[in-house]
Length: 347
Image (tube, rainbow, N blue to C red; front, side, top):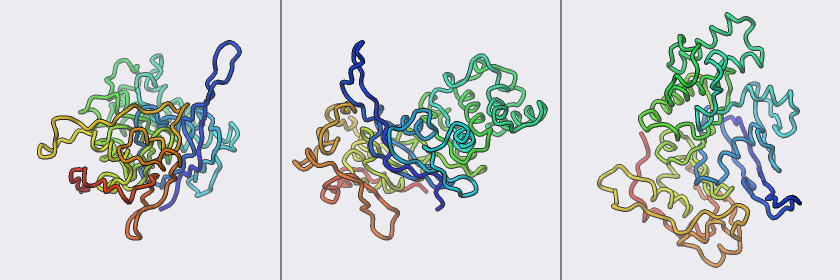
């Protein structure tokens, strides 16, 4: 498949400052040497606990925050490869037509003093897509119809809408410039479950119509399984497992992935338990990561090697399946499937 985004060894470090002297007392490694790629028309999901660096990755890609190190390449509609970190302000402005973001809280991301006409029309004005006010109004109406909202609402303000409707407005704004990649930062986590389904279905529908690629950031495994093609499991700023979603759910190779799956509520009455599985300990401080494998203090399979040597992502798939990357010293000895209930791939 054709690539649309390549990220290589991405790092984002923050210095911890103390007192009036601004003394540096430590470094928070929010994202640490992370690599992945996204193909055209594909949905790659980033999954992990809060604070593992998922949102930081999305913000680095659009350079809302500047990466500390690494390389990010974007392939435009003509197939030309562009280094996102070498772009100046004007070049970055053009690239942001092709890479858009949908934020977690639809109310916080919409200006309460602007009407829908101005909210959705603003990127069209900034990039001079429309040539007249009539053309702008027609385009805004078209975008509202695309997200199943009445065009007559365009003169209303965000407070007049429900959470799900506000997220539809945010999606319409993101699609106004006809991007090829959308970064969705937990777009349904602030919504009711019934509304979540509507938004997820809408996002899939729009992907089919416009050939979008998504970087889908989430922590809800049920949502991720429905929405994604591939899944990258993150832990304290690093990817510990990356593969096709069916491989992740049916053949997990990393103990942390196993933990996430066991902790996820299962609606099947024949497989449910009275208590959910709990992983011991707390997620470590990114400013004081454990040596070796960062998951070893919480891992029931940890051995002496795990405490001192950092595992790197390796491909553990056979030639007949898609690449399955895992960062674990003992992935081939764990036989994680013995603990997991049978989870059949989706039709």
